[in-house]
Image 1 (cartoon, rainbow, N blue to C red):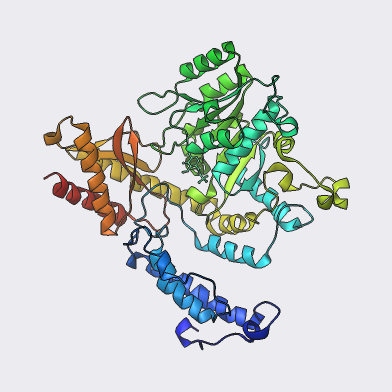
Image 2: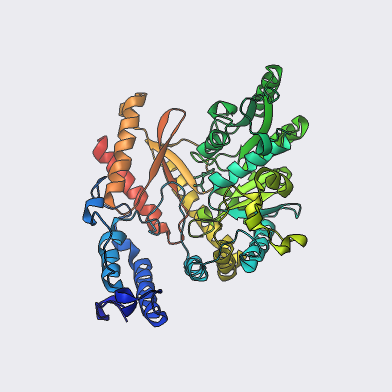
Length: 497
Ligand SMILES: Cc1ncc(COP(=O)(O)O)c(C=O)c1O
């Protein structure tokens, strides 16, 4: 039954009930919602990828206070169709080529629905034996799929930001600071700590330093070469300088697939330095890590098996609905040292047996049952199915990069190790006027995005406004990437005739 066929009536439970929706009413409403979802996915291309809205234009369409009495599910779903769906940025749209794409795949969405219905809290084994044990299973499946040794254990968090925060907290414990017990403020015995990452590392690393009380000053941003890859000699020199200055290095973060250009830090050389210096090595492969499920494409990951911790986000390029971040580590003991706190009310008899209570390894207590959707989609796609799609995205990207390379007045601004192309329009008549080039490229991107057919985002590389095209959506076909290229070229003709 579709929403239009349903009576616009209240459920008796909404009038004087003391319990939840009646199961049969739920069945019918949920079927209607599934119809909406299927219709949305089937016709997402009817929307502009980014809606034609201005900031502040949406909120006033909603009442200023919650209703006193319940409203029919039909009315709510009708408003969902009217107010919610059209005002979304359509990450599910095949023309979504901005940031790093993510797709909520069918199997992943079904997993989310079942997760919500089961209502598990994966904080303790006792609060969800299945969520706890399936998390272990899925972490093992992903680890093997990525080609990493079984010395890596791990867990699933919400985002890479949290995963990296946890990794750096663990690194600090391993450094012997005992911050979990004593904090770091007002302690003359604790030297100022330092974390090293390339100048291209994601802001989540700096944020982790802020959150952990190390401060943004603690992050030493190491220079990169002209391919935006960390320079190991600069790293070595910075560590030596800091040691001489009486500071306390604790960790190095290497990135495989940086956010701006998807550059690849030389992980093996960095692992050598981490080993020689006795520092924790964290590898941020939040976006690009998915590629490692293809054995023939593991070159850029060489050396990551020597890391203490690695983050890969299934919610980026493994078609998992937000949120799901995989944190792998050889040092679960260190994570536990950083975060374990077990008050009486969380003690259970199970503690006499070796159960894993995942909350002991993370800052938060309550945890979503994220393993369910991963288990479902890994089974639905199969690893071969995932590999096929990732290889296809790499082909689409290579074709786009080749078109940019072959076209006069366009230039690529970074190598393309994965599925993201960084480029700009550079007409001869603007010469070396970088300000004018920045303005022209910003205007081109804006014009393309206003078309609604595709959605691109930008960054700045070597000071230059850089347009990025990132393939990662399951629905993206050659025609969408080709359309982006057509739109870019026609916008360029308009902007800088
Ligand atoms: C390399 C890298 N690390 C970390 C992140 C942060 O990811 P999340 O949004 O899951 O915290 C991103 C986001 O794009 C990223 O590109």
